[in-house]
Image (cartoon, rainbow, N blue to C red; front, side, top):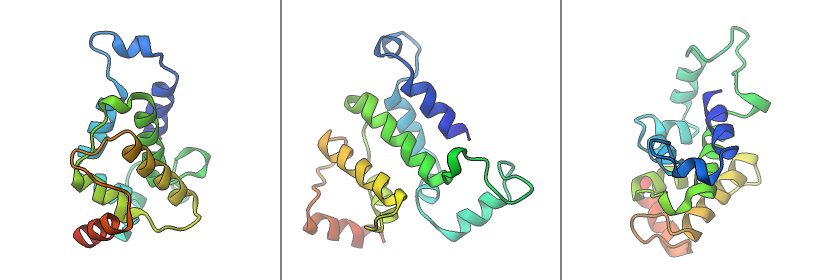
Length: 149
């Protein structure tokens, strides 16, 4: 899928290339992804989005998605966000609404998706990417979950 292509291009680019005038930085890609109108649906596992995805042009006739390595669109999106934060943390900012969308997708399981989400939440916190102070403690998580569920 397109998300993987973007992620591969970003990960194979050098820091010098990002400094070139007119080049899109990983932080800009991150901003475009989280500000997309379908971000909340894409990051979540909502059934209505899955239904819409099955009828979209990116689905094959046999019902299988065209995403590489058997990853879902949700997983590809999370991997793209991880790539952007890893490569350009100083230019990545996330609003509390986007943080809430990411957090609401997290099920605290041992699944691949939850492992990716755990890493993403850690990188956001470690690099102070949040626009407002959001701490990874039980109290804040509880308050954020109630606010965004």
